[in-house]
Each structure stands twice: as C-alpha cells, then as structure tokens.
Image (cartoon, rainbow, N blue to C red; front, side):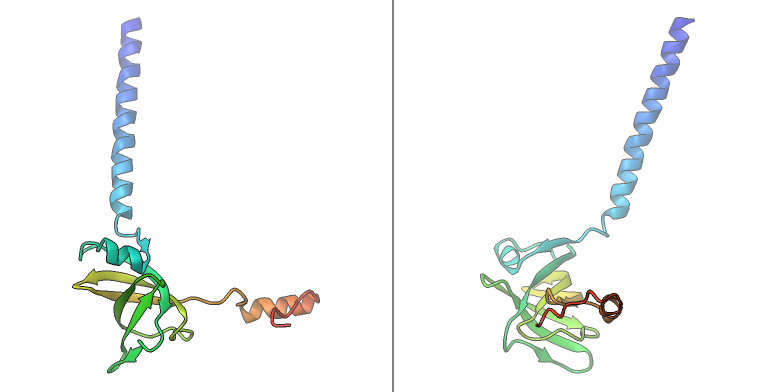
Length: 147
C-alpha cells in the first residue's frame, strides 16, 4: 500500500513539473515580441543588432538634422553625445517632437539606419496634465513650477 502512495506522489510531482515547464515556455514565447530592449545610440553603433530585432533607441534629436519629407515621412538623427544614429519614420509626429528634444523610437536597425515604427517625444520634468493642475488649483495646493 505504501508503494502505491509513493508512486502516486511521484507521478503528481512529475506532472506538476512538466506543466510548470510547459507554461513557462508558453509565456516566454508569448512575450517574445512584446519585449523591446532599450539601447542608446552609442550601444547601437558599437554592437549593431540584427536587422530582425525590434528595440527602442533614445536620445536627443540632433540640431539641424530634422528633415520633413513628403506626406508623413521624416528623417532625423538621434544622439546621446557619444554617437549618432540616423532615423527614418513615416507616421504622425508627436506635438512636442523637435530638434534638441528628447525622443524614444521603436523599430529596427537596417543598413545603418534606424527604421522607426513609433516615436515618442519626452516631456520635461515640469509637465503636468491640465486636469491635474485644475484639481490642485481647486484644492488650493497648486504651485507654479515656473515661479
């Protein structure tokens, strides 16, 4: 009788281990495309990623590099002070996007050019949505960060 209990316990442990390994593999496979690594322009220049790898690059839009093309097409250069990477993008530009501003772009690095599928403009540290400002003013605790 004891050997039957021991055998059943071993079977349960083996099934649980296999189920855990399988679920971990499925979760990893599902998240494979959703994880975008962040790289600086220096890292991209030093160790260029494969053309199939999707990642994020961030830095400042270099002054004098923003070229607005036909339709929604733009090109610019993103830099971190150590290296610069040319970027091409087709789509709607964020309102705060411009030269000298911080940006984060998602896409692929192909033939020395980062082909972005999405660009984000960084806000400064004083940015606050107008709804929050209004709520703080109503409470009497709002302080203007600009003086």
